[in-house]
Every structure is written in C-alpha cells, then in structure tokens.
Length: 562
Image (cartoon, rainbow, N blue to C red; front, side):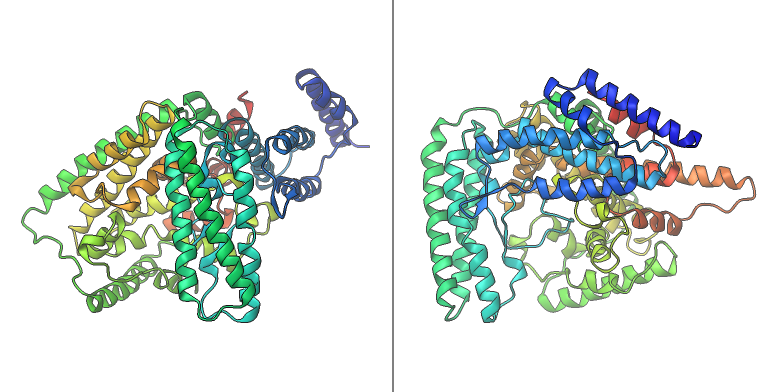
C-alpha cells in the first residue's frame, strides 16, 4: 500500500470522525456504517441514486407532496448528504471536484425547499402544471412539480399515439389539484393571490386546446374535460381560501443569503446583491443619458411597422449578427446556431400589444438576439451533450441561473462594446434600457424577499425605474416576472449578478493567461473564453471560474458556511 493510499484512508477516517462529532445522533450512527466511497465512480453512482430519490413517490397517480411524506423524505435526504461528504474528493481533478459540488448544491436545494421555500404548501402556482411554451433555460424557471404537461411539445394535428400520450399527461391534473387542497396550508398572501392567476391561465390553455382539436379521441376528450373542470374548481377553492391568507411571502434576508451561497453557489449575500444591483441600475440610467447625448444629432430609431417589414428585418438581423460573430472570431460557430435563432424570431406585434422585450425587438432585433445565447445553450445540450452525466441535463432547483441568465444578459453589453452596433449607435441606448429594466426588477425582488416590499410595491418600483415607459402596469410580463422572482429566490437578480460574475471571470482569466504567457505572450481572446465557457456546461459561474482558472477558494468558502 502506497503513501497515497494511506493518505486517502486517513482522510476518510478523519471525515468519518468529523461527521460523528457534528451530525445529529441518528445520522452519526449511520455515518459510522457507511462504506468509504472514495472515487469519482462512487460520485456518479450516488448521483444516479440521488436523482431517483429526488422524485417523490406516487400517490393516486401523481407525485406525493403531502406533509407526512415530505417530512419523511427530509429525513431520508440526510444519509445521501452524508454519503456525499464521505467521498474524499480533495485530490481529484478540478472538473470532477466541480461535479461533487454540483451534487452538493442539488441536495442543499431539496433541503431548502423542504425547510423554507415549501412551494407545495405556500404557492398555488406550483400546481399550474400545464405549460404552453418551452423555457429558454435548461429547465422551467421557478419551482415545478414532477408532473408537467408540456403542451408546447404537441404540434397539431396529433396522431392517435400523440393523443393517447397527451390524454395520459392530462390525467395527472385532477388528482394533483385534489392533493393540493391538502397541501396548501401556507399563509403567503402575495404568492396565493398571484397563484390564482396562474391556475386561471391553465384553465384558459386547456380550453383553447379543446377548441383547436377537431374530433379528438374519446380518451383525450374526457381527459381535457376532466382537467378543465378540476382546474376551474381549484380556482374557486383558492378564491374561497384567499381572505384567510395574510402572511408575508418573502423568505427573509438570512434565508436568501444562505440559499444563494449554498444552493446556487453565488458568492454574495442579500446585502451585497442590493449594492451591486443598485450600482448597475444607476450605471444603466447614467450611461443611457450619455448615449443620448452622443447620439443627439442622429435620427431616432424607427420601429418595425408591418409584418412584411418584420420578417425582412429580423431575418436580415440574424444574418448580420452571425456574420459579425464569425468575421470577428468572437466565438465558435456551430451548425445549430443560425437555425436556433431563426426559430425564435417571433412575429410582428401591433404597438399597443408589445411587451418590454418585443418593443426592443421592433426597434432593433439584435438587442434581443444577443440574449438568445439561451437557445444555443439548449442546442448544445441536445446536439453535443457534456461528457459528465452530472452536467448533461438541467441542474435541479434552477441552479443554472447565474450562468444561463448571466451570460445571456452579459452578451448584450459585451457585443455592444465589441462593435455590434457601430453602424447603428442608437441601438446602444436600447442595451442600457434593457440593463436598467433587469436591475430594477431584480432590486425590487430583493426588497420583496426581505419583506420590505409587497408584490404590488415591487411591480411599481419595476415600472418606475424602467426608462421610456417601456415597462407598463398593464403588461402581463410585469406580473409574470415579479411573481416568478418571489417564487424562485435569486432568479430576479441572476441576470445582473451572473453578468457581473461572467465579466469578472473574463477579467481574471484574461489576466491569468497573459501573465503566464509573459510580456510577449498572445492576448487571451473572446474566442478562447467562449470556447472554455461552452465546454464546461451550464453550471454556476463560481464553479465555472474554478474550472477555468484553477482557483477554488471562493467555492471552498461557500462550502465552509453553516
């Protein structure tokens, strides 16, 4: 037996003793019986078991979120966590250590959901399981149950097999809504009232689908009718219960900070995020004024005025954007990138019906196409899946948000500075308007989670600090965003915090490479940066930074928190 084996055994014994000292008694007893899992293969095996366990058991054909089952599962989670900590990963290659931390973050996510967030008990929107659109991130934003009906994945006309599959999906709706009446014991008023609207939207979606289908199979027709009836009855129940819901909906500053650091691996507290978002909101407004000053003698941007013009301009803008990226060697171009954008260009929207983002698109489409890095992420996950099973699919609990939303938002300003709008300077104004809107809504969400803002006040702040009146009170987008950010702590800030962390990583990695190359070394390029970022997968930026730079101090600090 070599010295390395002795060291490995010694570390394993130390961890076991440490666990006995600091774990609850029942876990300490279990920890003493655990085998000494030491290899990366053990982590992959544990990951498979963990993911299987994370799905709740069945109750009447749907996942069981009842209080008794959830409490039991919380206790069952602890041995999984202890098994993870018994794996000595300190000497592993950095990418494998990163995978260990991803599994740790997911387990912490389940723990936090049960202890604090409790969406099945506090949030009626949790039970709105019929989705009409595909998310642009690896998984749906916000807490979702393990029984979703993805209507967007069914494209009429449906053949018999598709109708049978859809009928089976829809049959989950009535029993889950029946269970929801047992589970929803929380007192979060804003979540409750907003959730009623989400369930009403579900009823409208089911009704619209019934109207679209011609002569559906009997099974599908029955499933649609039963799902619609159950949804309408659930709305009525929620409304009847609403007067008794008077409690706060935010999770509080301490819980928010713990969640960001221990689950989403964002190395910031609530207070630090407030400081950053306040700074970015101020900067966006100030820089917008400077751009307006610089462009004062230029004609104003002209919005697209017809469907024909929309089709022509959006198609040309995708071509222009892709040509810019390739000609300037900014990032690796893949075959799926151009079609991924063209599939998401949308259609002309009359001015009085445009939301914030489609207002921007109708002035300069590329300002949103830069954010659509999202669709390249999804295409890469589909066409070129990561070699690590842990990173191959979506991370649970929206742990991907700092990377997914941060890079997509960062691309808007990075491409502007890289010269994308040199021939259209007024478009630069839109970039700062979009940043201001994201900083405003994120800052509002922070105050809402601190219970310093109601959702109504968060919406008002969001509107007041978005330039040019582009975020209006009557827009469905406003309510959707503030509800989502109250439901999913940290998501509203991830666009700006993630952008900051991506920019910091670009600075640190550039400096590192150039110092290693010496005075005559070649500068670190954007092409190299995006190549490394894409190769690592859609993981928290703190872990991405560790993998690219080799500096894991920030992540180890997060691990050391209580």
